[in-house]
Image (cartoon, rainbow, N blue to C red; front, side):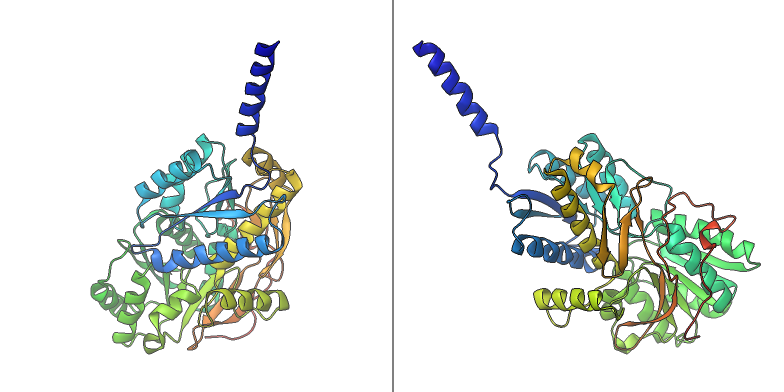
Length: 401
């Protein structure tokens, strides 16, 4: 009898030891570049996640438990991102990852997330041609950004196009779509150039732009190279040539600075800080109160924040932070985001999003010149040859260059 009691006591002790403490934190991994060429873009995304987590905890946490961030530095290196994702999931046992900026980084982390059947929330626009049972994409797909944005540029700015991007997956894939759109609209690509991430040498590029005299420069540069590019344009007095950027937002304008302000710079996103809606102004005020009155928000910041909010709703609905159960609950989620209603598309795990085009202002903000009006269904595998992503969109309105 004594032996039986001892065995039962031991089993009960092991069970209590292994059972999660209801008050123990729910851990999430936040994996972004805090150093290297992508840090200027990615540090603000960590701040966005932190704001969302602090708001959740201030409201009582999730399932009676606080949310705890485990932050890791990807160091602008895809191999480091992959290794840190493995560590966060396997060793730190995070319930979800909020991670990455570049598509190359996302593709490096994707196999690890899928292997562990964990969850990842990716906040950037991307080139499409991908979806995953383990990833929720809160940025834009090509039919929500590249296709309508480029169609507007060709109709509004001109059809002689110069393509410039960083030398990795997203710019190459985006420009493949753009080349087809230019051809379908009777335009011409004058040149297509790529430079390594972090490159600072734009003299030859700017000289070629001056010689070719494009109607519009299409910019898919990422990271702090954007600062050097726009300063080189300014130094060459090419401020009259319109630039349409697909990866440069408010924090990028702030880094460039008013001294090198480009008066004909346009950006294509779902969100701009200047959206006048009350929900957005509350978000901007909260972000600045937490991180500094001089800080700006942007589309990737908003998408990172919204990703946490959608995940938190799914955890509440699932009644657990178990990734597989939360994954199922995620398919039902939508939220009133600062950019408008953001709803998860069940078929693709991407988000329905509106699309906006803004013209840069000297104060570092964007003035809205074009708006889709309604949320666009995500199409990560768009039939861009027929421009199906453009059907039903309203005509441009507002300011002209």
